[in-house]
Image (cartoon, rainbow, N blue to C red; front, side, top):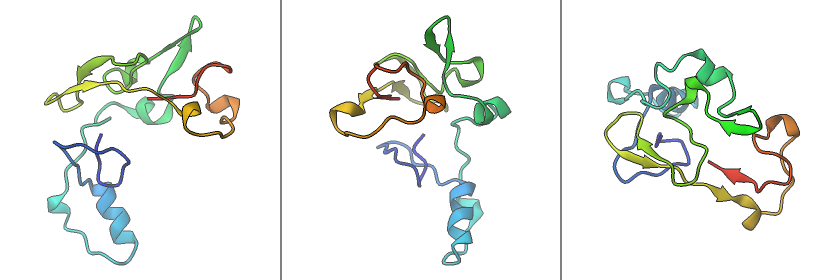
Length: 122
C-alpha cells in the first residue's frame, strides 16, 4: 500500500502512518504531529500471522495465498481484486527481475518459487 516511506507510488492515495512519523521523529530532526497520520489499511487487523508467517506458501506443489494474506497478496499476473480499503480496484503485477538484474537468488529458505523458475516480484 502506498505508505510515505515505501517504494510504492499511487496517484490516488498516500498514507502517512504513525510508524513513518515515529521513524522521522527518532531521527532527531523532526517533531511529529501524529494527528496528521493515518493508519494504513494494508494488513490492518489481519492478525499476527500476517506479520509472522510467509506471504505465500506451497500447497501440493502450487504457490497459494494463505488465509491470513487473502486480499493482500496474489499468485497470478493481472489477478484483480479490491484494495485493502475497498475504495479502489487493484491488479497484481509480476516482474521477472532476471530480465533486468544479474544477481544471485536469495537463499532457498527465502524463495517462494522453485529453483529454475523466473525470479518474479509480486
